[in-house]
Length: 57
Image (cartoon, rainbow, N blue to C red; front, side, top):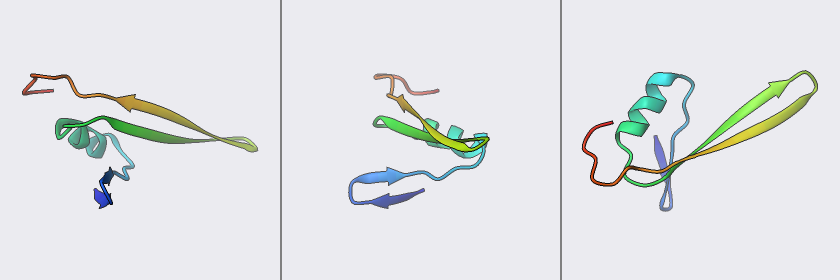
């Protein structure tokens, strides 16, 4: 996990890194998933927002 300006950047290749980022979630989190398929490339954007007044995931 790193920070550029006011944006936290999580570069993850696996569920354990993503799960730890979700547990520390205090603001919205945007996942960008790169999808390589045959001769094309796509990206899927997933926005996860925190649940207010929640102590545990």
